[in-house]
Image (cartoon, rainbow, N blue to C red; front, side, top):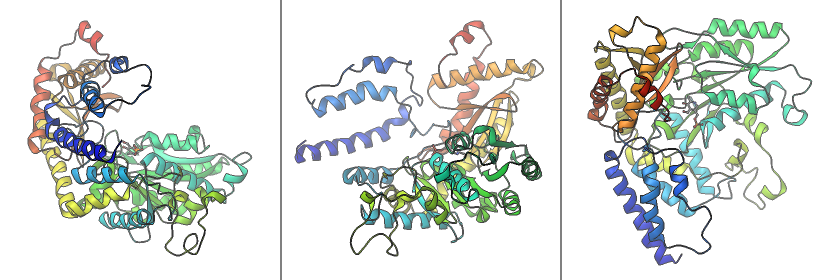
Length: 493
Ligand SMILES: Cc1ncc(COP(=O)(O)O)c(C=O)c1O
């Protein structure tokens, strides 16, 4: 591509993006496409000769856009948000243009030094003590994997990487069933084995870890000759927003000499609001803490803040320096201030993720970021209050930050078999999402099918949030239990 064409198409891409974000609210939130439909319309083999950008862009609109689920839609209330923002998108454009590999200090000193500064800004924003430093990872899954590997190595005297795990008593990791599946994945990948992930019982309105149960499980494991290794505490679980008492978990970790990792992937962003920081009380005593600015801090995926107390334990676990990655010359390896972040991460190659954080935090300012998150929380509470006052609905779990769960439970159906209400709610959710004005997803709580609501989109307004009440009620009125409906319930939610 000629430089002049690049300029023209880059301008076109900027116009396309601005139009997309201006108009996205008029599109159905969840893609309304059948499985395989898009695949079938794509050429089965690659073009031998280059095609004009005009045709590629036309196909973007014709083939791809209709098959997208619009995560930046103001009425996206599903899963957790993956919110982005104009300053973040602009930073992603320039990051893509520079396309730097930020694996070593010398492969882009500015990227490394900005990363160190951004991690410290984030640390201050959520009021973690200065005893934490950190790194930007691609995802919370990777950060948690790194934490579990570090915990494993710490308990094995940093010999697991060389000798393997054979001949050692099974290592044990403790978390509740409310923690994310990335913890299950981490113990698998770390060679600890999912049978050694102990699911500690939960208690209380926040579905938090039962600290006494945790201590008993650890003692019983020790007694049985097993090797307790790490505790993973959860701050804002994915299902219903469960929050463990981190201070209590930290006390158990201290007493038993275990590593404590906190997964605050979603809720961590809200900790920029001092009035809700009570939820993270005790995090100062953790060994590591992860949260995703790519969820709720207006920063494009991917961007995960991974804080650690002891960076040496992390680099002793993940760091390798083959000859081809050594920094030669006067400045580099071993020089104070020179960090090779690949030694803090599972992948070697690293995108320049700090730039979008820099653009976002500078462009909005922390006060505005707080204001937006507070609005999401307040509107979610207001919507919850409306459902709570509506006789045909029941609240299953109250709001934790901006997440609550509810279900359609007309009084005359409550006495029947619980499966009937499950089916009714599954059908209601399908109809809501086929309708396209809003997007909600489900979870299971205490064995029952429930509908989740969370607010966190950048352009969401109070009226978008309140529309959920009217739309859900309107669709619920038309939901009837019939065999025909049941047969049609095959579209993924
Ligand atoms: C609580 C929690 N932890 C971890 C993750 C995994 O996040 P990532 O996609 O960054 O790996 C999620 C994703 O939703 C989550 O909700």
